[in-house]
Each structure stands twice: as structure tokens, then as C-alpha cells.
Image (tube, rainbow, N blue to C red; front, side, top):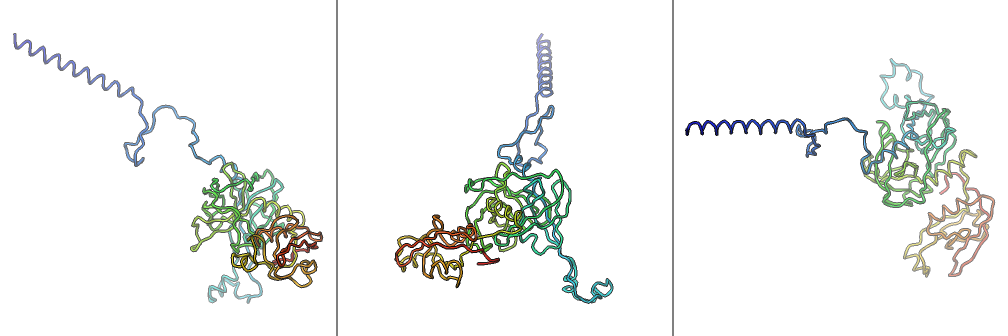
Length: 387
């Protein structure tokens, strides 16, 4: 009897074990596989979710829409300079060229350089930097869709380092101009261009500062500073906001190595637009000029002049028989306003005067011997490459 009871207990135990094994295997077959984030997603334990594929969902913080909107309008620019002429004809003979040093061969070879540009109108006008196309004999534009076209130079403005070129193609993608005046420090921006010739590239950063000047890069400076990576080949490319609208033309970087260190500068689209319209209309930019040299007001100078303010620009020199000289401005005067607009510093003075129409009259208020005087100045035309 005891043996029968033992056999019964063993049989029940085996049946229960088989039942538990069966139910466990059944649940494993029917249960969904869950996504598991691992420290290393290449580990075999990292699993994908089973089931039908789903349409991609835009990840939070993605700027794919802005990039997709702006990238088609950003082009690569390839410029070339013809070989120098006037050298001995034997230098062009393949057999004799190897007997001359590398310097002679390089001078005789065609030079090429890379840059970027932005299509700003359906008529084929492209904004870029002056230093990208300066001295080029041939300019070729490569669009993001692979099309290529020869470009002609419409005009340049070395004082802002801007240039306009034109291509003749149909169905051109055109970038949307943004509002640089509404940009704020901390806003996210994308830099689009062709760094080092690797192909169209997008980098991201923020606006680090606005109104940067006194960098001695251009005569007229009002840069947007950004930490978005800008490298060789990015010049002339687009700096866009988080909506893909053009905020500026990438122009220069601060670097001791030649690579990006997070300090890049872009020309605001407001400046670029004014320059572009003038170049398209007349082939060049016309600016006002009165013929003065200015100096910043330092705390020491303010104390010596007995000034209660540090705004304005000290007139350090006056061009003889120039507009300022004829209008009564003298060295030592402090220019306070131009046509009612206050002069904050020398850069502000330069920009305010440049906006005046040559040939017209402008009222300028100066401080002379602690007394304010308003003078009528007939504005002249700014000569090229004037400081």
C-alpha cells in the first residue's frame, strides 16, 4: 500500500512539472518582444520590436524639416584662375616641365578653389562671399540636385565681402529670407555649406552674439557670431534659423589652426539683401561719405574732454576740401548724431554715413568745446576701399 502511494505521488509530480513547462513555453511564444536600450546597442542582447513596420516619427529636437527646406538652395561654387601667361613656352611642354622647380609648375597650372553660395531668386541670382569669387576667371555652380551651370559675376562689394553671381537654369530652389533683426542670442541655427569639398554638410549651433564689429575683417561689420561649425569651403553658405529661413551668409571664422573652434561669423541677411539689390540694380554699391577719420571715446578721453557720456565718435582728422571740411566739421569735434540718429561709436558712425544718399544734405550734430552745434553737410560718394 505504501509503495502504491509513493508511485501515485511521483506520477502527479511529473504531470504537474510537464504542465508548468508547457504553459511557460506557450507564453514565451505568444508574448511580444520589447525594445531594450543597452549601453552598447551593438550587443546581441539589444532587440528590435517585433511586428509590422511603422512610419518614422520625428524625434524631439530634430531639425530635419529646417535642413530639408534650406539645403536645396545652398550650392557649391568652384572657381578657377587661368594659368599665368608670358612664361617661356618650354614650360608648357610636358617633357621640359619636369626640369623646372615646383614653383614654376604651380604658377603655370590652373588654380581652383571651393566655396558655397545661396540661391536667393528664381531668376538665378546667388549670394556668396567676395573672397570666394575674387579674381576668378571661371565660376561653376553645382546644385544640391546634381545639376551644374556656369555662372557670371554680377557684381561684388569688397567692403562687406559680398558678391552676387547668376546662373541660367529653370526650376531653381529659392531660400526664404528670415528676419535677422528678430534673432536673439541662444537661438538655434544651422550652417549649411561644402566644408573642405566633402559635399553639402549641415552643422548645428546657437547664436553666440549679435552685432560683432571691430574684428578688422571687413570695413562694414555687423556680424552674427555662432558656434555652429564653419570650416574652409563653408564661405558663402547659409546660416539658417530653426525654420530653415536665411539669417546670414557665413563669412569668416576665428581660428589659430584653420579649423572650426566654435567662433564663426555670418553677415546678416538684412545687410546682404541691401547689397544684393544695389548690385543687381547698378552693378555696385553706392555709399555716402563725408571724409573724416574717427576715434573711439575711451574713459580716459571722456575724462580729458569733460564728457558726461561715452557715446559718439571723436573726429580725429578731416579730409581737406572734403564734404566734412566744407560743412564746418573740425578735428576734435565729437559727432553725436547723423540726421537725428544717435552715434554710439565709430562703427555706428560709419554705417549711418554710408546709408546717406550722395549729393543730398544731412544734419550732423557735433560737440565742440562743451557746446552742441548742428551742421548741414553735403554728402559725397564713398570712394572704393576707403577706410
